[in-house]
Structures are given as C-alpha cells and as structure tokens.
Image 1 (cartoon, rainbow, N blue to C red):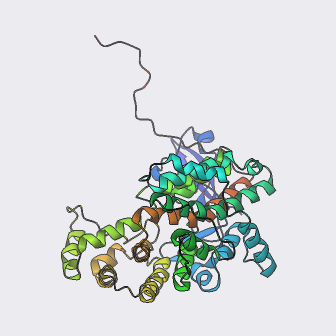
Image 2 (cartoon, rainbow, N blue to C red):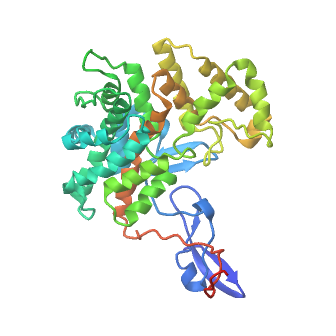
Length: 425
C-alpha cells in the first residue's frame, strides 16, 4: 500500500503519494499540488526537490558513498578502465569481453573531427579561455553530423552518444594546443582512451612521445571519478535543455557552459590558488584561524561538499594517485606538503570535524594537473571530458522516460501587481 502525506491548507486536506526508491530518502509526489490547491512549492536551488527518476548514480553524502549503477566507485577504479565505466553508465551493466571490444571499436571510429571543423579554431583568439572554445566547438558539432540528430531514433541517439564520448578528448586537446600556438593534434586509435588524450595533449610532430603508464592511469582514474555525480548543476542543465527536444550536441554544450561556473567545475583551480596563497607550511596555522573566523572572507577551498557530509570517497582515491604521479615524475611539490598538512588538520581539528569539512576530490586533482604542467584554465576542460559520459547517460535515460516533460520551473513573484500606465512628469 502506497504511503501518503496529508497536506492541510485552510481546513482542506489533500493526499500526496510518498514514493520509495531503491536507496535514499523517500520523496513526496507533488505533481498534482497546483492542480488540487492552486499553490506551488518553493525550493530555491531545488535542494529538496527530486527533479527526475534515475537509475544511474546514487550518492549518500552522510556515509560518503558514491555508486555508479550500484557499484561503489572504488571497485570500478580497481577493476575497470574509463570505457568500462562509460559503458556501465550508459547501458546499466559492466560490458563482457565482446561487448567491450565492440564498444571500443565504435568509440575509436569516431575520435576524429570533421576537417572543416578544425578551421573553426582559427576564429578564436589565441588567448581565448579553453572552456569558451569547448562550448562553441561542441555546439557546432550539430552542424556537421546530421545523421545523429533525430532524438526519437534509438540508433541515432547511440551514434550521437558515441561521437560525443569519442570526440571530447580530441576537441579538448585541440583547444589546449591552439591556445599554446601548437599544431592541432590527431588521435591515435591504437592507444587507450587516457593514453590517447595525453598523447594529443603533449606530443609534437617534431619529436617522439611516450605516454607514462602511471600518469595515464591517474588520468583514467580522474575520468572515472568525474564521470557522473547525480543531478548536479551541469547535469540538470543537460536534462533541462534536452527536455525541450534540443539536439544532443546542443545539450552537452549547455552542460559545458554550466560546468564552467567556478562554483561547479572550477573548484580544483581554486584549491591550487589557495595553496599558493598559503605558500609555506609554517603559515598554515595562520590561515586555519582565518578560515575559522566567520568575519574573514578567506575560505579553505577543497574542503566540504554540497552533498558529502563525510570524507569524499573520490578524495581517498585521488590522494593515492597524487602521490603516485609525483613520485613517478620525481616531483617534490611544496604544495603537496601544504595539502597533506591541511588534510591532517582537517581530519583531527574539532572545528572541521564538527562542520564536516573533509577534503574533497578537487583538493588533490589540481595538484596532479599542476604536476603535469596543465594550466588551470584546462582543469575544467578535463572535467568536461569525463563528465560527458554522465551527461549522455542521463540524456539517454531522460529521452527513454515516458514521464519526461519539458522543464518549466515556476516562481514566487515579488514584483508589482498589475498597474495602470502613467508616464512620469
């Protein structure tokens, strides 16, 4: 028997069904609220609103749990590569050997971009932000790939999905090299997804380049850890754009635009800036006190999370990768020493424990990128490469959902009521 919530307004009561998912909090179904009461709910930021039903990703912020299709992310990092994870998020199950081979072949067949599209880069200034380039180029894909724009055709949706996953590393590496005045790269399909990305980023036609396997593994982990994260701002943007029946390339471009915001995808860049601001380990106590002072504008970036109220499970994995990369490259980064000391304090200091300000994934990823000499402007670009998998998985799920409707949030209007026109004298 379905449980119900009773809402009483001015002496009149209505029943609202309570829906139970496979995990997590129950939700009150308010779809008929306006029809039955004439009222809307008010929830700025939609922090207490389930905007959709989804079977892709589950987060328990209090327990520090992140599941992709039911699998803890740590298990996927230990046993899968990024394309395994991509297949899982899109199709719901880990691929078998033949399924994986077919999926990899399909992705490999779409890694190049149309040659005319390469000329688009010349329209950007050399000092353009790479995320501005990403928004423009990904949005322009719909002008070149007309055979995958019919969103009612399952096969075309799959082609668009594979194209986006395959082309994002190519476009990201092209943006990186364009802004540095270097030749635009071509993909090498004999390499893994992460290896191919690194080769496109750093190789030059004038010399040979060997991909470091430790670095490639770290990038692969970063891709897995950032592949999806439930209904965050960029994913919700993709779903909202998709609800209007926009083409998939436009939807992903909208997600990239939302991710560009510093409150969403730019956190690891802010972590690096904070560590450089602190400068040396001996200044850490001073900045800790500044962070505790509510009247001081300084904030410790990379600590705490909107969802996680426990240790971010992705941060544990990223910390290990960070040490492996720095050791492999022989880098003794003073920023890492500051980061480790800050982490120790955060895990022991009663203030941080009480506030549940634990290190998050952005705390370490910025250090890894810095060690690889990737500029901060590219941090969010790499994030977008990984998150494209989650975006297309969520978009595909939404397109197949019979309950899907065009998004139309309502408002609490605080402006003038109707008034008569009168020109000021």
